[in-house]
Image (cartoon, rainbow, N blue to C red; front, side, top):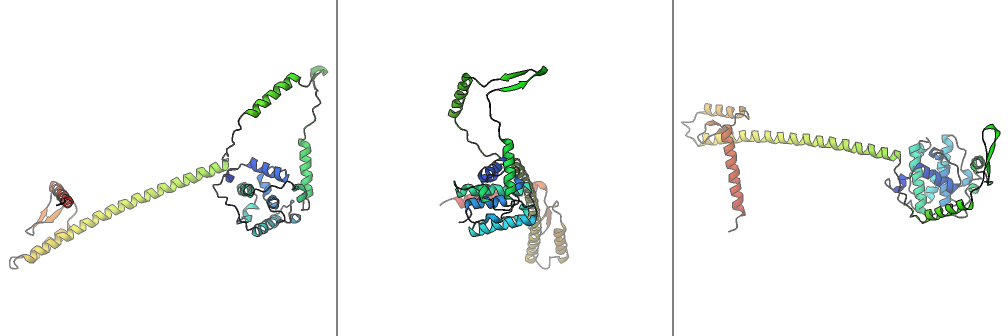
Length: 326
């Protein structure tokens, strides 16, 4: 049998500490008060024995384990049972034996979810008898019976005496029949009320983890957005610089074409070389260009704006011509 899928966002991982302790105590007749008490692996072994009878040699389970070595021996029994039943669950023994609350809480939550999904129910199972052969089981049973006797309520005798000042005593009698009748009516009304569904509540640890995870995601998102803005700015600067040098190259090309087509006798090579250097060393603010006669012309800001508008209008007319259908 393979392990039922219990994902990290499964409802089982929102089960609280108190509910888990009540689950183990009721099912296995234990007296656990802290999640850390499950770190020895003995509880997980008996729960596995409940679900899959005979997979755990309960006589080898050490209920009185104290050292890490003894804890590991219990987990070896558990891992052998998981392997036998093909339960694909990794048990991080190194973390669990340290008895840290969070690690053992998550493992206990998984154990309860695994039990719920297995649908196991053994009416004839005696958990006390099943673990009685294990080491330290007798001491565990004595401690449980001692705690149970302490919590056992005293029988009600119908009347109690309370001592007041000066040695006088007053008696309190049992409730009258009218009082009992009103209690029965209240109980019947309470029984007819609709039962509210108890929704799982997030534990404080899970809320803290969720807030930290959200904060980390928001921080990473902000860092990525900042990097994107830097990349976009760099790309814009590179494109501007590319266009700037392309215009220089184009002006030099036009100048050379004019010189080539001109009369060799009237051409001045030194003047042409000087014009080439002027084009190459011109800044973006100077906005120079080559005229039709081969002379260097400095464009004003207004001329540049008018040229850009004319170019945009020309592109728009060309686009309209492309859209016309003859």
